[in-house]
Image (cartoon, rainbow, N blue to C red):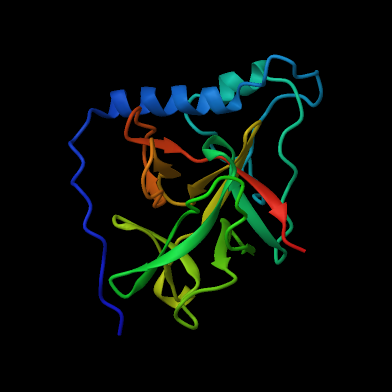
Amino acid sequence: MKNASLSLPRRRPAHKATLAAATGLALAALLAPPATAQPAQPAGTQPAGTQSAGTQPAGAQSASRQSTGTRAEPITPGKPYYLLASSKEDRGVTFEPYADWDYALLTDSAHSSGTAVVFEKRDDGYVIKSTRSNWSGYNVWCAGSSGIRLDREGGCNTHWQLFPTYAGYLLKTATGDDYLANPAGRGKQWLQAVDSDRAGSREFTAFKPIAAE
């Protein structure tokens, strides 16, 4: 039976208002179009794959009203995709073992596709499954305080919603306000779901889905 976790520094407590403001600014920056964007579809951002209007990310609603251009194409459930981090030189998502678990991270090299994943539809979002892993049956993305570990679907209840931006998709947990993020700067790019974008520490990861076949 697996029983291990990464040991990461504890985060200092922060005021909710400060976190909300930082999150709003980060999301607004991702939702803002490039200077050369051409007018296209009307504003309004909704999690991909959801039926109800839901709640937009903090700061996203006002930014999307002013934005123009072409957003990322929708993903197709059941189809394998490489997820390339547009803010990290198109590094793909892959996995590495740590303390008897596989954890998701970005590849060490730029413009590297990594390991394909599959999105499986659920009522409130998607389950994300890696197409490969070091332990058979342990391939589901599970958000925890130690990072994104690969677990069995029955042992993890993390469902993900996709918010399209001009840089790609933001991945948000269906319950709570945590977004997938990567460390700022160099070093191992272990992925983690966090509640705010923190300059110099962690930044929200926007992914471009590229069909694997």
